[in-house]
Structure formats: structure tokens, C-alpha cells
Amino acid sequence: MAKRTATEFKSNASTRRKVCIDDANSHHILQFLQTDSMRITKFRYIVELILLNKTNSEQFKKEADGVFAMIMFKGGQNIRIYCKEQKGENGTCFIIASELLEKKKNQRNSHAENSLIQTVKQYEYDIRPQSK
Image (cartoon, rainbow, N blue to C red):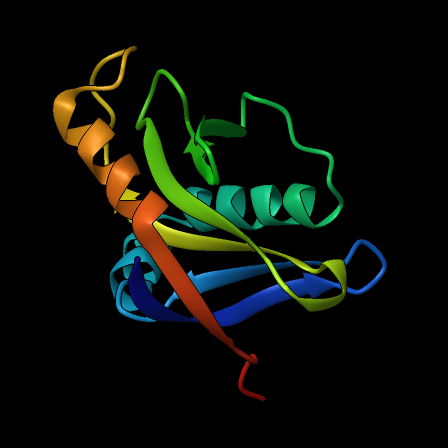
């Protein structure tokens, strides 16, 4: 397991779900999303659905055991953010935005995408609280 750190992005106490961003990739992920207002809006929308536990496979799809993909603009920009699901104390569920795929080109996962999913699957995170 590759040990990494992630910082809380947003949480929901009633559902005990927290969305975090991988510290090593947070600058790249957020910078990419913020270059287009529609991207950051869609990201925030999916984060809210995750926190409320109301996602469907159009926005948040299981790719492997413990790995999910945030799906943005399917059929258009087709952006993916691969996320690691990790359980914490007291039943808290952490969803960590780990790796960005700026454009998925095929319906099926390519070798490179499968490799990225397997890499994310190997990540294990220490979660840091959101800075005030």
C-alpha cells in the first residue's frame, strides 16, 4: 500500500461522509477544475450528492473494489476523477479525490485507465482536517 495524505474538502456530519482531496494532486485537480466555471460547479454538485449518499452511476461509478470515478460531462469533456473510498473511525466514510483523468476517450477503460485505477486502489490515506 502506498501511504499518502489527503485534506478534508467538505463533510456531512449526519451521513458521516467526508470528501477529501489527495494532497500530492490537489493543486493539479483544483487548478484544472477552476479553469472552467462549469467544471467546478459540476464537481461541487457531485460532492454534494456524495455527502448526501444520493449518487447514481451517471455521476459516481464504482470502478474496482474501493475505487470510484466522479464522471463529469459524459459524452463531452468526459472528465474523470478517480476516488479512493476509505473507512474511518466511528463508521466515517472518506471519499478521496485521488487522480485526475482530463479526458476519457473510449467507452471501455483502456490499459492506461485500468493502470490508474489499480494505482488508486493501492493508496492508503492519512486524513488531515480542513484548514480554517
